[in-house]
Length: 242
Image 1 (cartoon, rainbow, N blue to C red):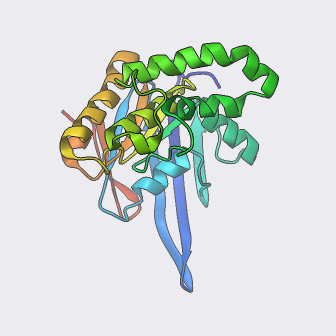
Image 2: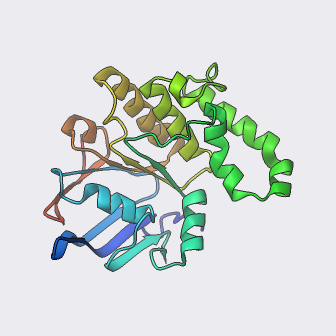
């Protein structure tokens, strides 16, 4: 999947609708959402609980499929692809970070970061590429201040350290876009600020395209743009968060 290089948005959704069965009926969560993310942009998606923020992020990350509408990456539609191809895109082009860290408890920090690359490659290819992959993973963990924690398992790490491991894991595949769902939600204010600083640096220094879901206005204002959802629709787009 090639980058957009100014020929349109890097990631976009068009007319997205999504509902879930609830009791005897259907709960409409998204009711026709349009959204675009340009290459190198940093967008915060805000809204009250139940407004559809996380659902939208999960649809962009191919963790779910819309009832109607389209998701496009670099101009190509991706939501309708077979499951194996959607899995491949999540492993190559889309990095995701969640409020819950989703680290594998039996693996070390280094092994957790390497997991997406181990899944991507077959045994023989992994044997050929594992040394370079380990160097990349170590470099990422060192960048996030975890160079001395490579062999620690999640139970031996603080919440902030676990989230940094999760970010490194999302980046090890060199994704085109990072999707972050309330990444500071389980952290205290000081630790959360450090995680947010790290995410902002990824956009400023590396030019990584980022969509961040949050309910916190102070966090949202660190982004370049703010998209507000209400009742399953885009209520407002702030052209600048400054």
